[in-house]
Amino acid sequence: MFSFNMFDHPMPRAFQNRFSTQYRCYSVSMLAGPNDRSDVEKGGKIIMPPSALDQLSRLNITYPMLFKLTNKNSDRMTHCGVLEFVADEGICYLPHWMMQNLLLEEGGLVQVESVNLMVATYSKFQPQSPDFLDITNPKAVLENALRNFACLTTGDVIAINYNEKIYELRVMETKPDKAVSIIECDMNVDFDAPLGYKEPERHPQHHEEPVEEDTDPSNYEMDLGFRAFTGSGNRLDGKLKGIEPSPAPIDPSDMKRGIPNYEYKIGRLTFMRNYRPQARRIDEDDPANNFIAFSGEGQSLRKKGRKP
Image (tube, rainbow, N blue to C red; front, side, top):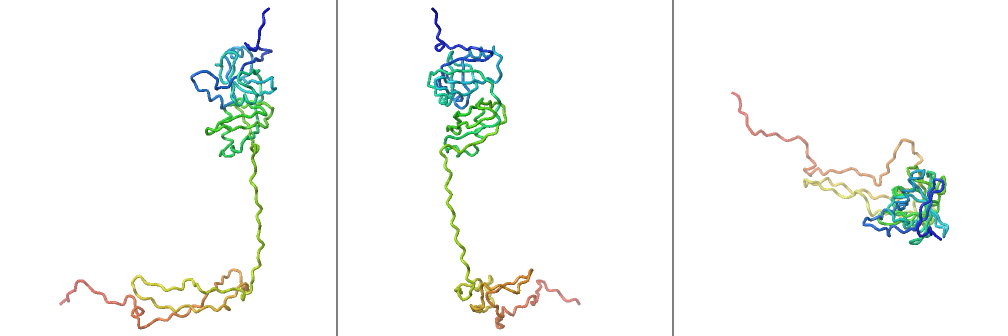
């Protein structure tokens, strides 16, 4: 009797123009070859064997190719696109974050089925760490990272790489379905508060009660020690300036605070002086004070002769 174990040699099958098969999955780091395929870890696409491309080309499927991945042992599923068909037969390579969502280990079995998904119109993400708030423009960073994804599934925790650091975001909601295609779409993006984020505490400000100002002039201490602009000036030419008498001291009774000006009229300004200026006395004996402008005699360098 001939027996065939489909888990050891999985082959693609088509049921009513639908691709469905099982592969043993490995992370991209296990992919043999000289080329660095770290770019696969930055997106949501897988690498499948060439036989899958041959089978898909014979089916009347819708492009772009989208697939549903299911781990039957844990009843976990997600959706993805395909990047290349260069894997060994019976093997497919997945990003590490996708294997974590499916609870798959290296060499585990995964069911791969072709699907058609609706185009996304809205998605909501929750960063899994408050470090995501350190990014200056998170929407622009997420938009650039999602270019490497083909679809989103509600409940998945995707990983994006920015500035040599991995940020994980949980897909909280997608519209119009729980699994949507994000290829060439106009999608609105929203964010939930990061996991473990705590809003800064706001300390209540204590407002001091205003103290009523005492308007009684007798309760004020008059500090007359410093008087502005009361010093003497000097001339650049060395001449002495007319000595002005020092201003008369101010009597505290002359300064009354808190008493309104009942004679105030709109459009009229009243300036209060701190002292009463006294008349300036001029010393007549000082020749500098007897100076009269343009009163000298002119001299000529050449003497003119008299005419006969």
